[in-house]
Image (cartoon, rainbow, N blue to C red; front, side, top):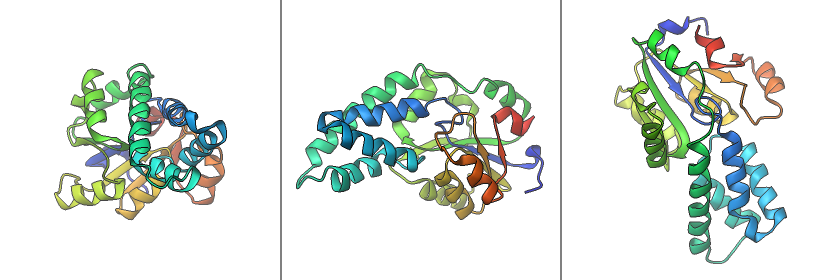
Length: 218
């Protein structure tokens, strides 16, 4: 990837760990939402979550009740856990740190379309970005689960809402897989990632990386 940042017509951001310092908020919420089932199952869900960054909460709770703490009919328990998770997350997302250079950089790159493609719940994301007064920076839209990132990217490319060349900025292996599967360039941002092995992974796969958003696009 040799393009300068200003050459991209569309810039797509993951939310957690890129726009917001919210990875720890999500991790704590997963753990606490199932702690009633025991510390070991809660730890197992936390590990699964951290190993599968960017995957929607719905798939993670499906995994919990199907593989970690299987129940015959878990629909009610799953719904309760999701509700608890949403409550914990919402409180944390309202307070967590925003990427400090976001507004400055948006003003600098007004010619590109900006978009959020996240594993977070779409309705929750849109409400959150509105309450934090940052929704206006993402003129391409704010998208999330229950649709997967692959589904969102494919759909928005087909609708020509994503104009190419386009780049995805993320902090997980799943972000990289989703971006490259859609034919997009990718940059890994490390400052808030929860990937313990991120450095060896980006080096091994020859993936462009930077510590912060500002390091990429200034």
